[in-house]
Image 1 (cartoon, each protein chain N blue to C red):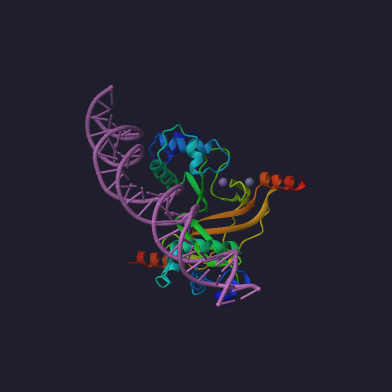
Image 2: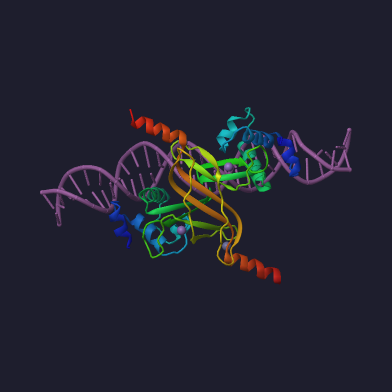
Length: 144
Length: 144
DNA sequence: ATACAAATGAAACAATGTTGCAAATGTAGT
DNA sequence: ACTACATTTGCAACATTGTTTCATTTGTAT
Ligand SMILES: [Mn+2]
Ligand SMILES: [Mn+2]
Ligand SMILES: [Zn+2]
Ligand SMILES: [Zn+2]
């Protein structure tokens, strides 16, 4: 679905900044950081507007914020913005070597049995380690 | 185990700042934020020293950092610092009402089947919602 | 007691995120 | 297409969080 449609459905005003964010996320199959989203924008980029729009899109459920660490934050589309639909239902892998975040669509978030009285809203699974690309590089380096 | 023993075992120098952090975490059964740890210290509190010591303790595996959001970070002991031992093996619950973090010792982190080539190091499960205390308050408020 | 590496604390900096406000813009109705 | 109005933007200024540098202090082993 195209950015302006997504915004319309959620009854959010169609502005250049919001469209740029959605487009950037649609054009990549990995979650993106602020810097990565910014780099895809033509100069006209305002930090404050970005923060406010990410907030709006996250609250609306269009974007899902993945917090790896306080310095490492990634965003992905959580609605049906592309064939690879996100409903925040899968785990995410953080590579400690190259700092990339990969969606592990195979690893679904299970149903949790919360203690009496607790109310469920949302959950995140972050798995840390070394990604395929980096572990390959490390292995071949050892063989030199 | 007492703070100085923990530091000795890990071959880390025994300093007042580090002991204060470990003591604070031992005296509470919930993970604590920097502010909460600080409030337990007698005036002599230096922000820079805190950051460095938390870093040292985390790297050594004594403390486990729980990142809920970039603004909400909690710390807990991950070694056998008290009867409630942490090996980062359980899920954590974040209450969106009172912003507390509860250890869900019942919910163990499962073994994940990573895709070919990925190497596992560590993982975190964060479940968000409303804690027992807050959901009780909300319920009783509705009945008024 | 001595020696030395490690840790501390102060200052200065850097990065990240927030708030207030006037100007600009999106949207709905005419 | 024009108008009206609420929302959004962009700027400045601020707040919070975390880092780096370096002289001084402290912990620990000898
Ligand atoms: Mn994903
Ligand atoms: Mn815990
Ligand atoms: Zn990698
Ligand atoms: Zn609560």
